[in-house]
Length: 131
Image (tube, rainbow, N blue to C red):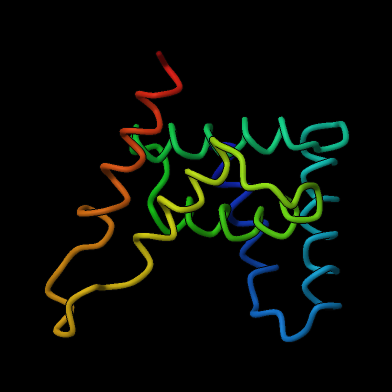
């Protein structure tokens, strides 16, 4: 089984909305502890960049679906913010790409934000990092 799917399933248990700052920090701590157990070492900003690019590549290759990739992205967000107040690439770019697929722009919801926004953004990010 794809390791990212296992990670996504693990994070699904954490993905309840966080109601206050303290619970958000606790949530980030649980996610980070899971990542550290998973990867066998402390997770730094560089590791988060690598994870984000791995998620993007697996999504682009259709190894994981949008929902799993978006869930991982959302769960990594508090961990990332605990490490830096900057929003460096590629993590931020991947975050924005999946975030763009979360909502419709048309009132009648006839648009497909994942196909119209997320997919091209992910393709551009991956093209940029492969140069």
